[in-house]
Image 1: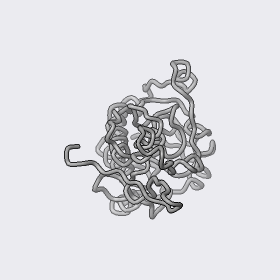
Image 2 (image 1 turned 180 degrees about the vertical axis):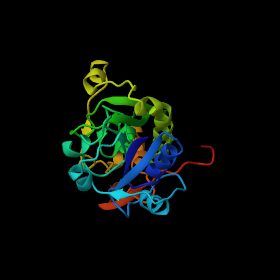
Image 3 (image 1 turned 120 degrees about the horizontal axis):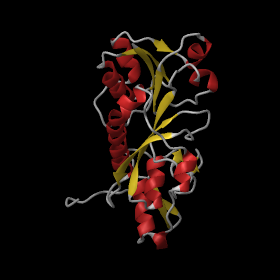
Image 4 (image 1 turned 45 degrees about the vertical axis):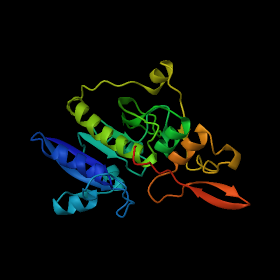
Length: 255
């Protein structure tokens, strides 16, 4: 029986927990929760991982408990987990830990991947399933889960597409992952193929929401408005007579 631990908070982690639990050769040994009260924007009507664990008598551990234990697990699965893995945790998994990253690697590492994808004008977005190392979004890439970015997608539309693509991509490669036969590419190999290497930190959106009034009627401005249209998060804005004016993206009835 292969013992797995899932790291996460949100419904995407619960979907993965349900998927792996269907297999007779796998035991969901425990979950690790990064935030018990996360902001949930996931597109599925699923429980948070903490609630799923409680309802199904799944053990809840901490990173520190795993690091200090002598127990070795087969595989870890990190589903948009909010904490950084250190070597003392990674080494507790025979195969390692795979991570769901919400942007394509290596071009959209770090934070706010869907926002930066739309700001860049890219026609391709998506997420990445990759092995975890001690860096941030630098582990070997198992699968780039690509989606088309249409010219009417806002940030939430692309977020939903990305989450669904990650789940579908994970299910496609899970058999190879769990048997230790999955193929992967290093970040350096992807760079050699021409992919750009970008990492966006917590300050990477500073100043990006503002659009000059004389630039409103441009593709760049529309991309900015789309990029910052994500539920009730702060939208793009301009200034008229010195006063800020919010700019929100709304699709018409034909879209």
